[in-house]
Length: 196
Image (cartoon, rainbow, N blue to C red; front, side, top):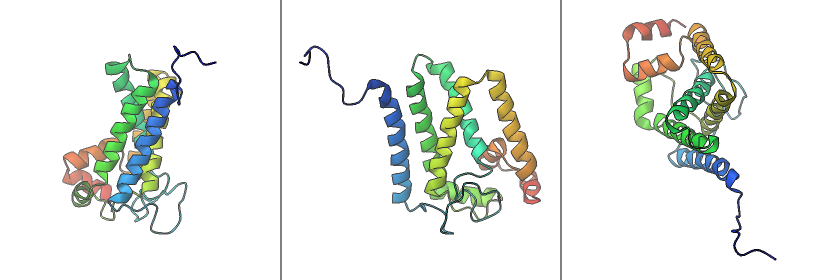
């Protein structure tokens, strides 16, 4: 006998944020497909890692040199949401972070932003991310968000610095330089990056 005073739930309440995150990812992928983004690399296969930055396959596979920047997004979103919304559960803060990351991926893959990248950065062969890459980038952000919830702040900050220094040293790019060149392009930085 079911007690009529106890509401029955089709989905346990603790799973609602997880299902919401999954829904955001699916809707993002569907939107990108609808606007004409490639599902995966035009080369016809999907690699776990693609390490050549100046390449038409960059941002087309599961991971690349820009994956650490998405992990950093997760670190930063966790820190910001801990400051302004710490009363929300981890799950609902993750929903907000995923929504922001997905919105960025949609904007980043709009024709206007793709053309901006091509005109003010050295990304002349950039035609947008594949949908596989976008989903993997969102997953990298989720990993960063989860790691930030588990690691001491000093370790998280050290990882941010390590990721940025490593990518700047190895590929002459990273999150900070990417944002700088998108918002306020500097000829000197573009010339330095072009010497990769």
